[in-house]
Image (cartoon, rainbow over all chains, first blue to last red; front, top):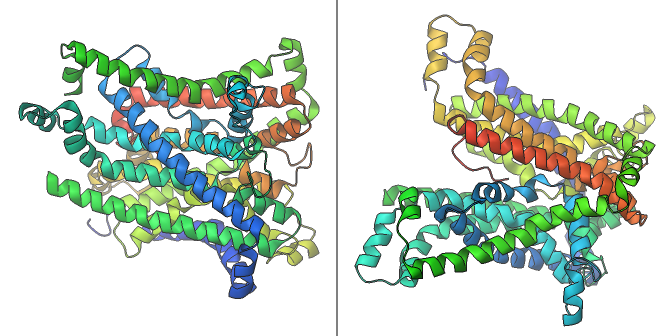
Length: 274
Length: 286
């Protein structure tokens, strides 16, 4: 780019850095500083209390499971939306973004109304001995809801650009539909599926609003980490809250790093294929 | 290619495979996306329209609506200006640390809403860095409106920048350089060339930013203190009514937010259909 013709670089960069510094870096620094001040041994002690450990485990394991469910459901829905034409397809395509648009508190009470033992869906599951609301299953349902759009939306552009020639060549060479899918299509989709998985995981780990209503928040059983952070804050236990927050923030940053590596790799991979 | 695949004469096996995929996909979406939306409106109108109406014109609900609009009216314009500035810098110049800056802009999306609230409590709360100073000067940020605004700005910071950066990168800078060579000053170039080129993507980003700003729950919940009529936004009012076992009232307020979500989706879809070329190529993920 030719230097000097376009104005506003110094002013723009200065403004952007100042805004990010004040709004993002300074507050995050306060958290890291607070956790640093606690000291390593006490930090470990805070985190290893059974209730804290159980909450962190539920948030991470639940988020992981919900992201797996979303990979399968997202692949199915993405495939159907891109490959088939049927009445109402465009409306459904728009509806995929509903979990992004619907405020989490609204999603939370709506899911609870559906899955509570006397709810629209819950009343039919109750005779079967299945209870979703107020159990870890409820946490999984809410996390799956908020993470759903990520896999579909990362997959769609890749599915749209999929080369039918390669697929047809596989058929011509005698591959069955299942073989063509597994050997030809799935490998092409893998980077997008992994990206969608990581995005859904990142969202679900920190999710609060949609989970707390349906979870029932029973300590050691259905209490997620963000809720325990809020509880510790309400008891003015800033050290305990910060310790948990730093672990979750560290995980998010690690995931972000993995994501950018993944995207760089898949971009290189696509260049090589083209 | 897709259109050809779609109208390709289908064999019976094709039709079966098609059905086996479409039916579960539709069932999943109906069960998981449409039913939660339906239940909000059914529960809200369970006791009739009159009860619904009286529930949403109660003083604390009206105060919550006003506060929600106020918070969005401050946070969204600030993030709009930031988004345009960030996109200008990121898409028009090369400099050291550009990748790092891009990652920082996206960072709030990967921070849990609860942590977004917590960090402001650690800064401005009674025990926070600036707590004693604020206290001495009679200023209140946490458990007051400024805290709600700060937490909302943090959560919605990336939306506008995220839409504009890829679009401006793909558009290139030739038109702007031409305007400069022909003698336009910086402001003329911006308002006559840059802004018209990005207006629909800008509207798209503002739309998503606003939806999140008005619907944010976790971050504002931490800094709000839940003082009714003073620091409760609409999502917090939903929570408080629900916890008081006022389910109909909670769903009535929730239905307002659900309407906002539907309106957002409709406008977003219209923008995507009508101005596909003037939006960034990626389908938005955040």
